[in-house]
Length: 320
Image 1 (cartoon, helix red, strand yellow):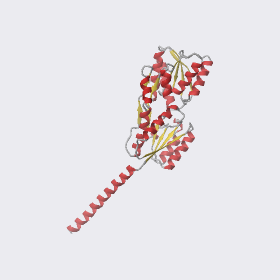
Image 2 (cartoon, rainbow, N blue to C red):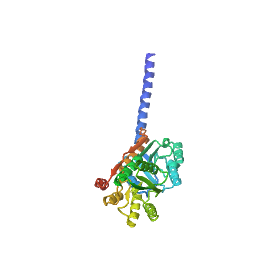
Image 3 (cartoon, rainbow, N blue to C red):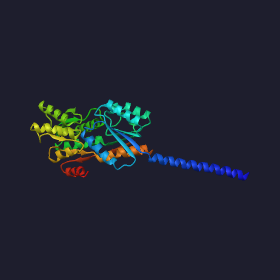
Image 4 (tube, one colour):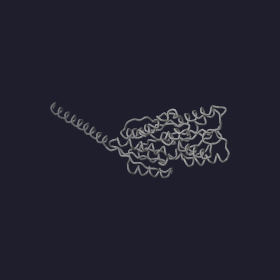
């Protein structure tokens, strides 16, 4: 009897050991499976976004067992939703989404969540932060605070301010506009006399600035929410013969923006660390696909760029 019991116990133990080995082997297979990431971009024609995606693609070359596909919605929410649906049908493991419009993200998250596909948002949040596993961005409000505080100092905290805003409703536009208004409200001798969107676009920034100049609007400072719109504004200012009479700031520290700063046309810009942001998007997507925990919000601090330190940031781009 004892012998029979011993044989039964030995048999049961063997079954457990085999099951344990099988489970570990399956886990190893899952871990070695190629991770598929679908990257949804709102507008690749946006200068800052083009740099961020280039950095992302460069970093992706160093990653193993990762397959990444990139799509551009060209500022169309319906196109972006269709692209998300295509990624879902392809069976991607994670979606990395830079939303066209924060207020139109519910349909995206509903589709992805129904399919059990997690979302990492970047450079623009979803309407409901609970719809994403992780969001990656620079501190958008801080960038506006840094820019406007520096501009205020340059004009001795006096003057009329115009704000050239990004695409209305996007998180970057909302938070940067809020920050600029906050700084201006601190100083009794400063006031906002105009604010309008130019959609993160150089040509639109130029056209808007031209219209303000032609209307005779008295402007001392132009706070632009990115470098592209700032360059457009500066082109209009230069053509009108007012270069040096109107102080202009931007955000993003793009190579073009830094060149304008070095040449004394742009007064200030803000560096949002594109490289770290792009890496964080992919790193967190991979962790999520691998079942690892990630931070809900990943935010990178900005750095103020002026004529005193512009060469340092030019070197950052040249060393890429």
